[in-house]
Amino acid sequence: MNTAAASHSTGSPSTAVFVPPRDRGDHVRMRRAHAAAARALKVTATGPDVWGWQGRTLGRKASRWWLRLVCAPQDKRNLRLWEGTATAHQALPTAVPRPRLHDVLE
Image 1 (cartoon, helix red, strand yellow):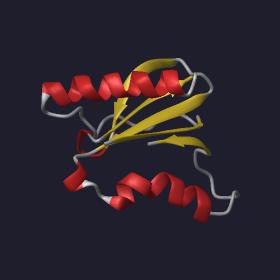
Image 2 (cartoon, one colour):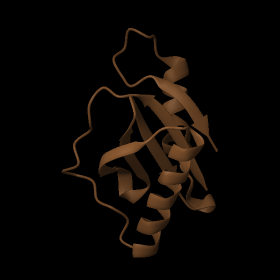
Image 3 (cartoon, one colour):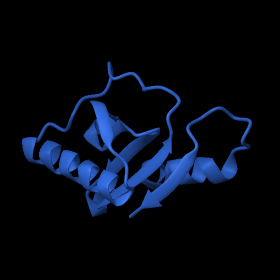
Image 4 (cartoon, one colour):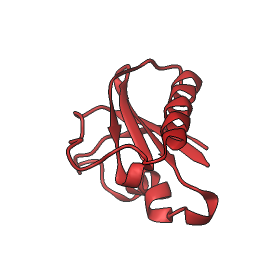
């Protein structure tokens, strides 16, 4: 299951701690899903891949946005990871600095 969120770019997160998925097939699947999300959102992804928690997120600059893909097996879906971006967007005041959520695809 994949979800993609596009938000205004406020700079790239550090890639020092995060690594791609260990399984090459997962790595390829995530990159393909990210490209499909970029097409669906009508943006062009550029720059390096930025991998997130346990290889379950993949982000890249996409036009003037930051496009983040979240992917996890259905039985291992962590709601905090899965819905965190949308929840934060709704719950936090706009004065709190963070990327602004533009759209979500599931």
